[in-house]
Image (cartoon, rainbow, N blue to C red):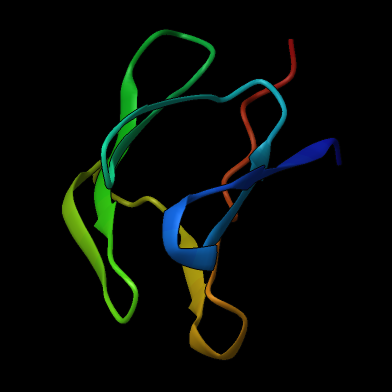
Length: 78
């Protein structure tokens, strides 16, 4: 499947396909796909995960007990 784990602030972790790129500024993050489109823009604090924007139909899971965000979408393989 080819997922990669990214450590975020406040003990959060993002798991997403290895072709996605993560950019950060303070507690705010942007995930970009392999076609250079923004997949998700979100913010984390010690006790909150806030989605600022996300692609329509994006499949993701938040596991609060482990402070983990998992993007379930996988880019099309050509």
